[in-house]
Image (cartoon, rainbow, N blue to C red; front, side, top):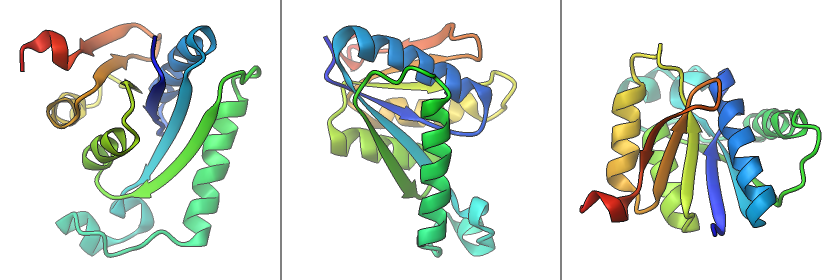
Length: 156
């Protein structure tokens, strides 16, 4: 039984697939869900931050309000939100922020969506896998598991 799942939410359809999969687990196991939206420097028009990775643009109220509205819309799109959910809005590099939040919240699992057509997905997921102590499940747009990693089973 899982106690908590972190679901990084982006604008691609694979994020909704990850959310549907996590919601199914949460409804069955009474698991808490954390929906995370990371505002990266390039999303804010911060050229210096995008180039250096430095957080030169702090989230302001408008950023947070947009991100909360985005997460709320994604959550209510499922029609029957029957699990406990928390919305998290953070700024920073995507893979680092996901790993930091997973450690901070001590989640059991990260479930994230990916589009295999994205050239960066394997590298980003590899970074997350190496820097978190929890299970990682990656699903595609059809909710098919494309990667499942458990630190206990890896021998790491």
